[in-house]
Length: 194
Image 1: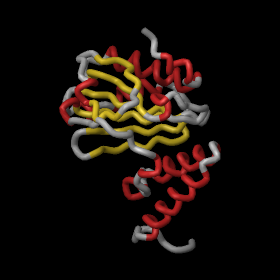
Image 2: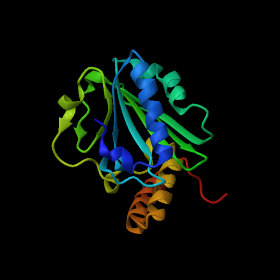
Image 3: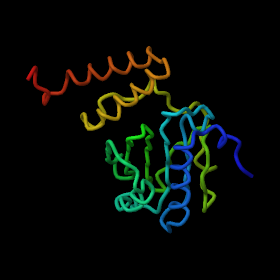
């Protein structure tokens, strides 16, 4: 049965999700794939990013680069930011020249990620997704940290602000920029003018 939320997802995001399904289902280290965020809520727009979580054999996230490249394919990239969440997850955040974007998080399957509803399952080879479900709301943009990874996430955060501004969410933009500037003011590596 096809999930009706697919019909609300713009074509560029559908293409990225299809690439995740094709590459993730075929990869032996990947157990499940899920989309969260606005796409899972059925509220996607032209600039919504594809927030993907791939559950994998423990440790695979450290070697996930080739899989991520196969998902991204030959799309023209404006920016890529990659990093790790502790020792259980690696992430890649891409902004493409067509203004689409994707966050790919590859997480150790035993890490116990709290999966709040709504989420949109892409595939679940081991039927592990229901066991990760938790009650309560999913994280909100209002609660996102600012100046992530000591500033390495700055381009991504400013892109988020551009998307929110495009949607008329000026209060959210102001809120995040204030948090961002507050954190940047603490950074000893940022010089004054010049």
